[in-house]
Structures are given as C-alpha cells and as structure tokens.
Amino acid sequence: MTRKAVYPGTFDPVTYGHLDVIKRAAQLYDRVFVAVAHSAEKSPLFSAKERVQMMAEAAKGLENVEVEDFDGLVVDYAVSKSARVVLRGLRMISDFEYEFQMALTNRKLNSDVETVFMMPNESYSYLSSKLIKEVARLGADVSEFVPGNVDAKLKEKLRK
Image (cartoon, rainbow, N blue to C red; front, side, top):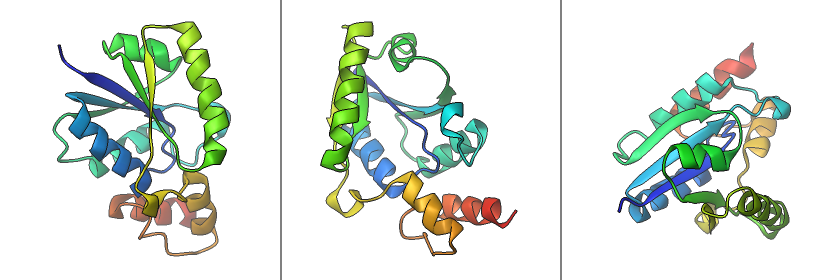
C-alpha cells in the first residue's frame, strides 16, 4: 500500500516553514501532494498559477512531491488522489483552535480521511505568509524567510 498525504494551503507565498513541513512529510510518506488552494476569498497577492510555480521550484528535487492547484473541499481532493491523510502545519498555539475545527469538520465530511498535524522546526514557527507579505511591502529583506525564487517574485510583484 502506498502512503499518500495531501498538504493543502494557500502558500501566498511559500515560506521556509512550509518547505520544512514538506521535506519532513516527504520522508514519512511515499507521495506528498502539495495542494495550492485557489482561495479567492483570501485575496491572494499571487495567482494560483504563480503560487504553484513558486512552490514547484522551491520543492524541486523532492522526487515524491507533486505540486498542483485545487479548488473545492480538501477531503474531496484527497480522495481524488487516493490519499487518506491531510497534513496541516501548526506553528503556534493560536493556530490550534482553527486547525482543530477544520480537522473535525473534515472528519465529518469524510471519516476515511485523517488529519495529521506537523510542526515546523522551531526556527520557522513564527513565520506566516501574511507577515512575510506585510514586511516585504514595507521594504524589509525577507530573503532569510523564503526561497530565492519567492524573494525575487515578491520584489517583482510589489514593485508594480
């Protein structure tokens, strides 16, 4: 049996915290699907296509990781990939309440799909895409928080 997991998120933009979770998940699962959510309600800075491209480049070299976009329920996406696990990152205790609520809702929608929580390395636990965008907009150097390709895209996008 192939162990498959889905790691969904907006990834607007991808951070080293996201990549840390993906790299560790790639060691635990035979196949990891990084599912970039369209998330129009969040008004992302980058289009889904741009976020997929940035993530694919950042995850390059992880042979068992596949990056694509999706729209709809994550449990439906997981089923479409024959994955029984949805991975969610927990950075701080403040994430727990929302993630717990989402996990229980997903369980109600499809009890065959389990949610597994993973914490990034503590050196990345304070990072969030929202914070990265905010400080980048104010001109801060975010190169130590995001991969080089993402840093370049942020600079390009925010110059416009």
